[in-house]
Length: 382
Image 1 (cartoon, rainbow, N blue to C red):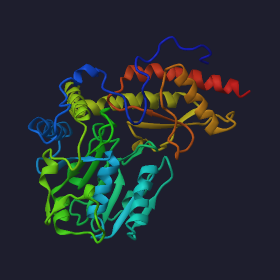
Image 2 (image 1 turned 90 degrees about the horizontal axis):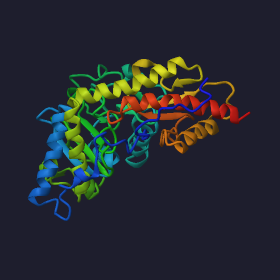
Image 3 (image 1 turned 135 degrees about the horizontal axis):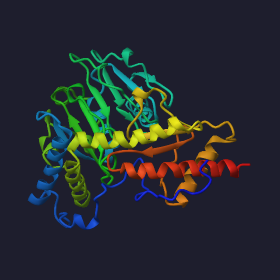
Image 4 (image 1 turned 45 degrees about the horizontal axis):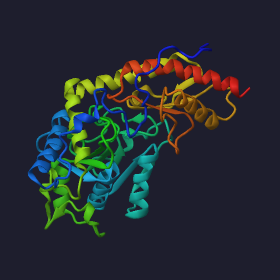
């Protein structure tokens, strides 16, 4: 029993699932080269935006014929652009097993009023992917359910000879999991997730099949200017070379470029995956050793290596929600773990970010404190 506070503290207590921890080498003075006070359409601005796009391609190993664009409104904006611009041409299947996936269902069914086939699963579980018809239908899904700690185990369920499009929200998966680009037609993520960039900017990645849909299909509803990806029936190619739809923050761009530089120093994509895997495994091993704590995702094949969601299982706990919040508050008060409470729509528990910008030594130092906080709260509730 950890009756006394552990001696070792994490060097960095930031375990938030978004915005996430900055790279370990981050220093605000390294942003001094940002093109502040300059037009993003000036040569220097366009060069930096293009560097962000091509750096993304390099680190994520995205095929040369895929288009990569920087878009407004974070991952949400990128997903919405895809939904509003491409859906309606074919039957749609919506897959949801956590809050963000459920949000895309609401947008498609209630806002766009598309009669989609909706398949859902409870938090900690995943839908039966074998029932999804990717051959004929457009399919919208999250690769990693940030608020449930559940990810798709692989892409074997996606047909190689599909006629529909796959639209994948990969915001807490990109830079931490292998994304099979040949299976993904639209992929989105945001800077503030796995690489710890600054918020408000999203990335939209289009396969040639997605571009063909954009250029051959016009949705029946009006598109706001901020969603328009085509003009005169042709893709607005400038969006994918650095001419953004609206004004980006050049400070945030510089921060993202810095994060990409750091990613290269740890071995690129495979190095980032290895770091996230090591962080998550430390938490998994801790859970296996403690009878009072469990992973929300019961199937090991679907457990996230970034947003690891945990639940308390001790029978002495009188109110799970109150107890989990008290544990999180106690750890924050000690500056051990910040912002690790479960997402507001998720089951009561904790959510520990294990992406590549987190150091495994910090995870290892935090976990004994988690046991200390658990025991302190058990004692406090009498």
